[in-house]
Image (tube, rainbow, N blue to C red):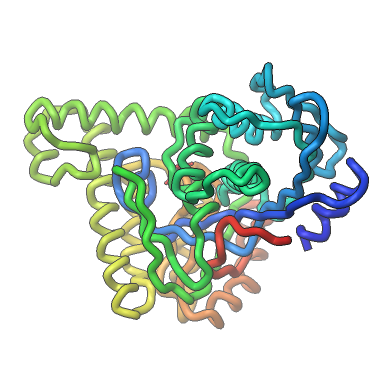
Length: 378
Ligand code: GLA
């Protein structure tokens, strides 16, 4: 549907047909939270919520004319003077900025965007936009489309242009997703390996505004860097916080808050490896590790919320549910629930009204499975 929509936006904005239509995916992380910027491991899937980009070269000035079909009309990004504007076009502008910075002579472009990745709920709508736009430009210009390299370029766009100190998980998911597979990611350096995963999962968006999120995320990044520095005083050659052992952590001096952040990161990476091995044996997702992950995020990383805790506790009382945890950065946003598909569908029916009664807001829910990342649509 978004493919038809993006073609329509394109026709209305620029007339005629685009040369190329591509899309990239939103994501949900199965396990491995707040480990990407610590050199750890994670296991996300790309989902069937996607952002589509229709693109065509234009003659004349080196500007990108871009429209999302909303009320903003067609906006112009001048390649010679790209500046952050605190609006959605900062994501494609950041990607242009990276490409131009890498010496690519980006010609004038006409671009339309359509998306059904909900924005602001922690399903990586920004990464889906960056990657779909970057993939469209790369493919149109015949540039090398190594998907890991493209994802890392998009991550730098978000870090340097948009100003969010994120890891690479979201962009790697949007780019490298594979239908029927989870993505076993390592981040130091970034590699992605597909592991068969055909289960459905239930996503519950707690619909809590995440105003705290930006500053709390950056605070955690700093706390982890401080914990690593403290470990290196005793064990100088530890390459990343995720690579430290519990005993190295135990022999380092640091404030309790930093110690708990580090404990989460080290234990979470062990859970990712155990989960990956379980899936590689063809077994179902180990729900108890999802619960352990949630408890660690709630107690040690302190990024859960009353609503996320409510969803996890409620889900765990439902028959046929194996596990549940907060997913993404936390402080609001989404939880992911694992179990038999029939149990997830039943929960999708029963949970929203009980949630609304208990917490006074209406959650949004989706049952999804692993989908492709960046792909050409026509
Ligand atoms: C956000 C960031 C990711 C990752 C997660 C937490 O989604 O963009 O890089 O750090 O939070 O796991």
